[in-house]
Image 1 (cartoon, rainbow, N blue to C red):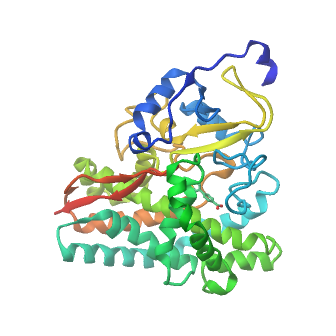
Image 2 (tube, rainbow, N blue to C red; image 1 turned 60 degrees about the horizontal axis):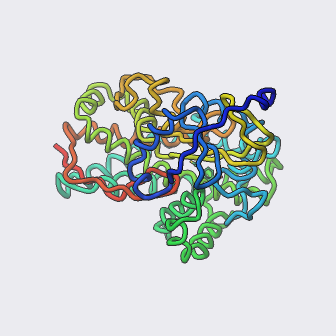
Amino acid sequence: MTKALERAVVPPTSHADPFAHDVLLDPEPLHQDLREAAPVVYLSRYDVHALARYEQVHAALIDWQHFESGSGVGLANFRHEKSWRQPSPLLEADPPRHDAPRRVLREILAPPALRRLRETWSVVADELVDQALAGSTEFDAFTAFAEAFPLRVFLDALGIGPDGRENLLPYGNMAFNAFGPHNDLVTSDAHRLAELSGWVTAQCTREALREDGFGARIWAAADRGELTYEQAPLMVRSLLTAGVDTTVHGLAACLYAFATHPEEWQRLRERPELARVAFDEAVRWQSPVQTFFRTATTDVTVAGTLIPAHTKILMFLGAANRDPAHWHHPDRFDITRDPSGHVGFGMGLHQCIGQHVARLEAEALLTALARRVTRLELAGTPHRHPNNTLRSWASLPLRVH
Ligand code: EJD
């Protein structure tokens, strides 16, 4: 790969700030510019190289040998700066250290392990939908469904207690901001860092976890010697960090997609078995996780451009998921397309380990809604919430029939 050094292509420079509020709230124009500019673009503001085309994002995600996670998957380079929290043994690690934690969590979150949750989650989804519809035909679907459902079913399955759950979304908002630059979104969260981290840390102890949940199974793996006792609480923390906000905003993306595409809702009602693929299509179309970084392990050439060793690479998952060179009519939300291969859950070694959990949540919620609601539409302007990593929502007013 480094053979091409002497004829390296100089990448175009962009002075844009992908983490500015207006871009976070409406990222597609920048995505299009970056995709069209070149396979690799230099971002002067952060001194990083960026990938926005499907081909290069996909290639970087699967090439963990050249694009490491161990130096952090945010802008901060762990070689030079300390992280705000102890690094994750899963997310912020490379093989071989990454592999044992990954194996343990994969078992715990694999489809067979989730089977017994399906029935319970479907009952809870029915309850939530009945509750919302009993109140009024207009409500905020972001709080009523997208937030309420994961906060209840996922945290119950994880095994934490009912108290203090209101800390989790603020914690997640902080954690996902922290992958970006140290901008106003990070500083405005800073005063709650100690309090929220303290609360989360307290939930990760063995004593705080019910005996039959995902959390207890992580501790049991430590007892079997499959993990160290130092890793176990950090992996419970992984579930609390990675498993709530991502699903909340993924479900919101899905509800927003259907509210703005009534013909797709009709299709789902006729064929509720499309619920899971519809969720993946919504993840492709909105990319709840917008960006991630890797770090070059050596000098590496991408499409002829040299990326120097130990520098950061910003991958635009959202841009790749709408790359017209890879997708037919990429801007269309179409539940009959095959969205497989989207990079909304990442790709390769670190690909989302909770994706089956997320799909099960989406399936339960969407099918409960589809059984009762013939039509849904926006009842007002939905509001997004800026976050350095997540395509987040603040409200999603819906009217249902
Ligand atoms: C994440 C993008 C952790 C952790 C793992 C994954 C995420 C966050 C935190 C989900 C990133 O192990 O702490 S989507």
